[in-house]
Length: 525
Image (cartoon, rainbow, N blue to C red; front, side):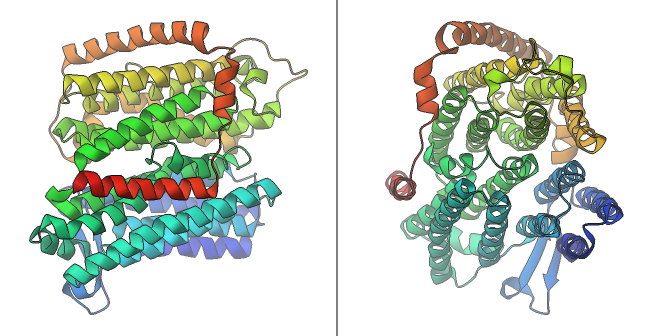
């Protein structure tokens, strides 16, 4: 059964490569994608209590290629299916290019393979395939600026994956296997000094792919967002980076007790604070959302490195929450940019008056990402801060304050009067339906958040009513402080706009990877 999950998107891709110019063929492909989501949900139900394993070929044990689906990987596969379904519906009238549709579903197949494979070298191959496909999609409009940025993006990812490749080569030298489960058993018996170099190599590559090397790791991606179609931005921010976070979880588990959780806790804090600061400095609607992704990934790394049971569950639920929230925000941003003809937030006003449904979805997503009570972000952030030390809870609160300030700035586009003359360009239903569905989940994922966490992660956890009320009061106090800071310190600050235009070159980012590698060696050693 597991092989079907890799093959179905490939079959859809080939089908659309031949028939994508026919709208009924695209409708049929969307139906097949719905079936894929249904199968993913069935797989999730089957793996809640017991993993499912398939041996590819006749090589059993660690010598063959094993596909493994467990609870967490099944959740990621379901999330991947939902995001790609939303993108396919959203893009129905945007493009009839067979190349676009072919690459879209081949990318889904590669990501699904990453969730299932247990082979370190297969992970390398699939990450490289997905990187090449994403690069082509980012450069799809063939504009010179995007072509140059895309090539830099590709080369930097190749450098990052060389770290990973040398790392798994070192693992093979030590253990003689590429199978993650077998390697984990053998590595547990080795001296920590032998694990230092492969750990630093592998985690440097994965950290860059996750965009958690503070500020440096995200610049190659973030500069591609402005001209990128919103559908591609959703994939990059909503699921591509989350796939790399999943790889981060798997690599940390493989190294077991050797994993440098405290180091990545510090890295997550630095990435989150840098991300919110750079987001506040932006005037481009897509750049603000892109830097916000960096901050939320940093928050997820904090949660996964916090070592508390609730904290880890909160981080895993925030992966899902952020994927849905950011997908809704990027889809609505695409509609807004199409209607207003600009990405400059200072020139976008009155969305509620011009496009009420788009404004409602946007406000639901904004309330979700800032952690407003009863919205999905409030549940994930409650669990993240539930069993961490007081100082770390204060850090999480500070990061959320930065997020609140960011989206106070972003929410300015919803109100006021538009300077544009005439009626708004009405978005078609193919764009509105997935946006509205994701917006609805921003609310439902909060109202039923505790039950969803228990159901998805097969954990018996509960939300303390008084604790939730206390965190809600902290949220409202943060909103009040955020309005004051934005009004008197940030609004109209030209220095922040100059900082927001900061960019880095190829050499600087490569150097940052080398420095990061050295820091892991220093800390873990």
